[in-house]
Length: 318
Image (cartoon, rainbow, N blue to C red; front, side, top):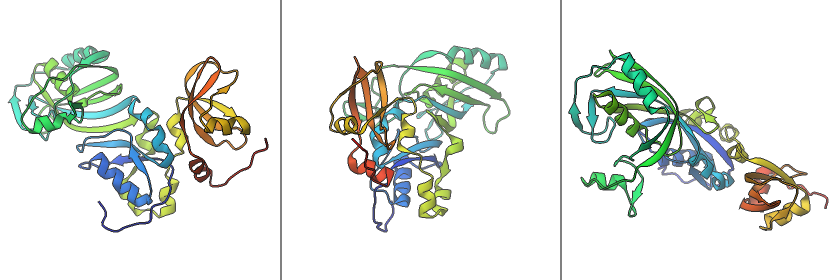
């Protein structure tokens, strides 16, 4: 994306980006990677170009623990245009059907209750989900519609406000907290169908993913205006990704063995998600799970990662 070459160096942590409108998640990632001069980076699940909002970007050692963000609950604010359905479920598609809108506030309350629960959702054709090795949007762009298996998702909280005088079409302003794998475009279409008038997604903003929210985000414009040191100061620690993990601390001898992939025995309760630290330095070593008192390594940092994160090598007594 950038023509000039920069010297890459190890950068470790999580940058909370407020993704701009019209940018793909990968384009935003590459821009931030270039600004930070980072050697390694990855994002935690894509946002559509038409969506804005919270996009956690992982650098260096943080990329090893990004899977948890893919599985995290998400929150969104959206605007649904009523009375018009499109080929893509949003404003980029061609109009399929226009219908009169005779929606009341009582209708909105009824439909809100209908969708605030576990529901089945069929992924949209215009999505990155793959079938037989090809993204669904590849089939859609070729004019093909393929069968998609319904997916179980959950809407934990849903608020909808009817905007009858919204420009162009009556609209609904919506806020939602949902499980992973929820397609808000599909939710918009399903809500429109339940209201009897059809709908498509006019705008979408992700307001939270897991523990990360908009108030902790920075825009690309603001990041660009910063010095290198200011940009690095925006990084959250790698273990911010492990917010839902229990903690185990190991002495120096056990820490060294753990880093070599060896399970450790201790008085620990069974648990699936454990963040493991070296006791004397507080350095993150990796993740593990506990079964029958055995601390079993899962994802380990390298010694180079640990040294770079702490910025100083500390010798611990054995």
